[in-house]
Image (cartoon, rainbow, N blue to C red):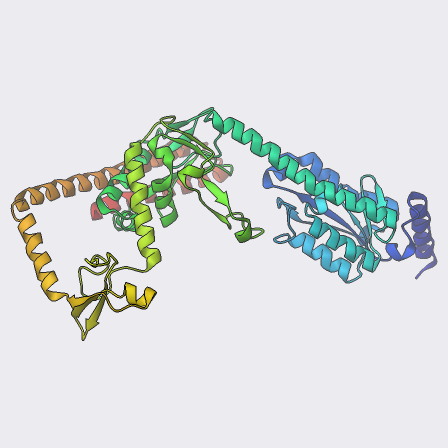
Length: 484
């Protein structure tokens, strides 16, 4: 090391002694880590001054005596909550560097930036005390090996965790108070748009028609999976408005998926009801870094707020309740694993006339079915209730079905033809609306291209590309209608 470097290092150490006697040469020989964190992406975008204030801690580290090259900023956790260390790669990296003995001081604008959990906070304190790492915030420098500093740091960690619960409680109370008036909304469901303190039906006719189509087909098919297959078979897309990014409020068309269809069928807003507290959390199933884990739909009896006839409705409340009952029935059948198996049409539909239990079906050979009642034998170790050949019952049911439908066969055929015509008209109307939208977009792109100065080739070239892209969308929509 040269004489000039030795003098500079001695000066830094002298300055650090003036700043804090806790900072010694062994600390200056290691890294000064500045940990930067904001709890959400919204805070990152809006609380710019707070973020810049945390970054300026690097200057304070240099004032304490660290060289600029020995100051490292960890900002991997911007936009991530500090309630747990899981999912925070920056905090985990900080812990690893401390455990390797590479860090002389950890700096944060306040202790709550490092951790909001006492478990994570005391884990960090133990590592810092074990490897001689200092901690610093806006109030000063702390040595975890010192009893008084350790006590103060423990109190700050406890206050940070308590502050999180206080803030969450205040936010929850404010939301609940507004929800009791039917005015608290996060974002509008599909088919609705946000008003000031309410919801309105989407002004786009095609979006409204899609929602009505989902409920109409579910009433016909009695299955969310059947509705989804119908939408995919007829290339019907769903209009969704963004509610997060810069394109907030803009309508995008994308293929429907299972969660979208079941979300529409389950949401009571389509029956005109305002609901708050549809989701409840099971703490034992929560996974840090995955907000959706541990959440499930609560029953109507557990909702915090229910206001009937508060919003514009697409279906009646009675129809919505019938849909929920059908969805529960479908789900319970799947959960029990009692789907029809084999060639018997009456599998899982026959009950024993003696004990009332559901009879199982077994097959002798490839197709010969036999119904058996094994409930008492399986659960109570008693003798088998009864058993019989399924063929006579099948023939009886077939005869009864033909007797029931023969007088009304013509009326049923006419009604089925009308339903098919109505269905086809709805599909054709959906694709015609898509073509109208594509024509409007292509004409708009054409007008923008024609209005630009031809000599401005950079802008003209981009507008020409958008015009060509809009024409391609229009051709694709017209070809899709022709295929239908």
